[in-house]
Length: 528
Image (cartoon, rainbow, N blue to C red; front, side, top):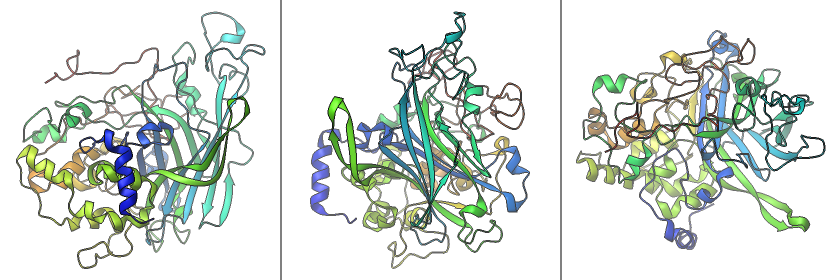
């Protein structure tokens, strides 16, 4: 799909009233049209060698890789009665390129969801999707304790899903045959779901050496979005963070996390590395140890209204959103092109290379902070974001292949959660972090702002003052390895909010006891 002037003009007309300053935030409402379609809005994509205790102790031949896509941004936990779900009419895909040609179709994992209405009290479904109250003493209202069977009756609106592996656009293999895969519902509150962590642990399904999870999780992307969107007036002048503050991944020195207390919807799959490499070998033996990953959402091209208010979808699936590296659509692609970019394939990125070579956001950073920035054209951004290591540019242009993918070197050993640096491989000396793949705790806002701004921004430690996920449930607690395998079924989480077990995102915040830590509140940073 090539960028045509008439297409751009049409996009500009649609988005004309929605133009805004260059957006920060890892694909949360990043483009005018996708902002109106939250169930198809990909907020974050993660790809990393698994860092749970089991994988840290595995031999190289048995190592696992985890891929995650998040959708439905900005979920307030208390927003009922119609809480949050995946869309039945959206095709969710995770794509893998395992031969470095830039075409991430060697392996594709497809997820399709189906919503069912289930009676909870006799033949009644009631006006709310989740029913249960352990204080009433009525056997029919003892709280939701299971995803299926006895104890699941209170889930009156339930989603099941399928997983299909597509290899080289040819071989389609349904996974988890014979299993009913149930998406873990929203964390309504303790009177409806008395032990949410136990319920969520039931949503981790295994098919041999493949694991999958779909359902609600805590939002792990952290950013002072309020300060950033106030024309990037961060709450401190440069140098923004002291060396000690920059090195502390457990304290937010001055920023206010916009996503504090909010949830997200997650699709996570863990696979043996030998399943995803081009020659089916382990990372240390394969000829192509680096993979490229992106996520996409698609809708069918025809949607017709049927009787009784139902709709029928038909026709080919058309991509409506994609994401690989964080912040590309926000920081690099200019607003009139954002929705068109979402609809193109990563392999067609050459048509957008002008945005990479002359990024508007770098000019904005120079004007706002008064710090020098690298000279254009920024061929370094082409090399890092659009090429594999060792692939050369051509006469200052991207050349071929030219593909926007999140690249992960599978030979790099994972870093245990307690030892991870939020500044990753780029700035934190942690080779298992971004831009070598991406983990939930990687502070991509600070990393990309500094890399885009250049040496002066790195030396002045420019950042938004939000260094970690504050307030994760059971932070610093846990009951040992194996989520769901030990008494209590508590997901192990580090003190600074890194989930140590699959699906590697913390338990979602519950609606009854929702808390958003805002500026000026007790224990929060001041407003300014």
